[in-house]
Length: 156
Image (tube, rainbow, N blue to C red; front, side, top):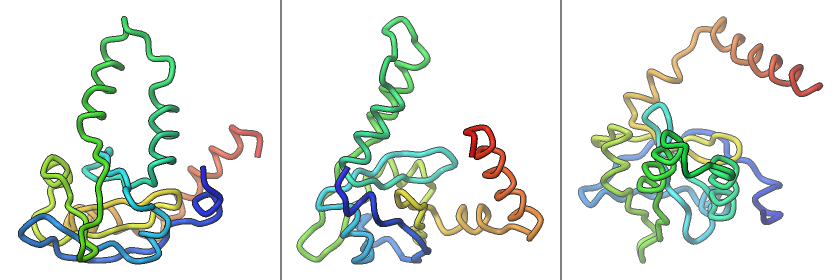
């Protein structure tokens, strides 16, 4: 993984409208972190995961390394996730086309939110992101508790 990627994190949220050709702009800081040809991959929870190519390779390798041919469920997951993964190039006007399969998966109609998710970016429909991100202070605290539980399991 490049030093630039390892040293920087994705933060914040950016609200956009997708145009009629399914194109969006990505903030310059995110573009610097994602490289020239980022990977857009369908993710759980009706989101699109956006990775630098080397990070996408590492994530997919970690996910599917060692999958046996006899494991139909994992092979199906690999095939389907692979068919929903796209290397995307910036056009001359600095926009990226979101593939239609991913638009449908994320339920994007017009408004979307590009979210910094620490080690990658995510694209959500505005409606789904508003629902996902609306938390009470107790629910937000529970997220930190869940992270603390994970650290204890790792010996941290």
